[in-house]
Length: 231
Length: 199
Image (cartoon, rainbow over all chains, first blue to last red; front, side, top):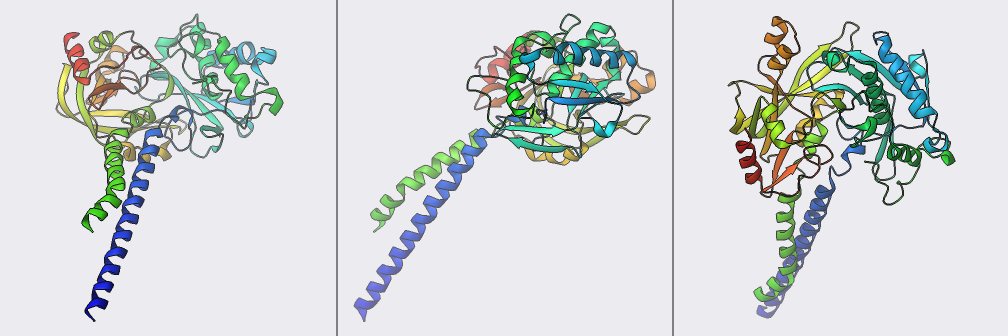
């Protein structure tokens, strides 16, 4: 009887030991997985557009139609028309199948451009994915949304009063719609001047990488080639 | 039995200790600030930390306390620009001055995202370079009524104008814009001293 009790006690102890061990291993696994995820979180934030809050994303397609809100000043409209024609549509194979054309029908547009008394937020113009945009992803860290909005902030209009500056801003914001990030040179500078009206070669290469002719201008389904930093 | 128990569980216990240590350190304190920015052509641009310090209306060391839906600016046609209001617990004012009651405004173009931002608050200390919207309204020549309406509202001088403390090191939220491209690795306290010296 005493032996049986001792045996039962040993079994209980062993079961508890095994359970405790399994629990500890499990806890260690969960914690380590969690910290790995935390380590990566935010690393691709600049390319997200849905899960993260305001970050710009890439476009769904290279061939897009832009639409002007009726309140947009004609000089800003001209700046966008000029940037579309000179920087995005006429680079042949350098720009893949990029084609920006104007439409007067809002519902058919992929890019909607307006000006706004948007408050003193420190920004002359910006692009974003508005509520209700269609969105999706490809690869592990690239996301698209459609349509995208471009807003010119009238609060700061005194700062971009010249036509060349407007043209540089139009080039810049179209670049963001395609997924280009800020660069040190050309129109993707964080604060382009009137002499920064053009896309750089690096920017064109990134657009070609994102929207190659082989996919009919739709987003590629794989990541850009290794070493191609389009951020 | 106790020895065997210890031997069996030593490895997972060690792993848990490592995971807990890593967990407290691996949270990205810059995620919130990167989210709270626009991909924009910005009104301000600085080549150096000293320039940014001297231009700012205030430079503080503080922590994000809370974020909530803030003001909305609406156009005549109904288009709306939303802002979130961030409350900062200030440890120290390094340069300039602040009123007792002030709010840091963050633009939120997509209204539906306003609620998510609170989930990303980092408890880390940070250096914030601030612009008074009241003073900005004055310098832009906006009327007295508008200037008064902006009293107590601040923004970051640029969307990159935040330096987080991360393991005692100074960590800019982005290293893609000046003056942070060649920022390198520096203790947070050294950057605080540099800012104090450059006032």
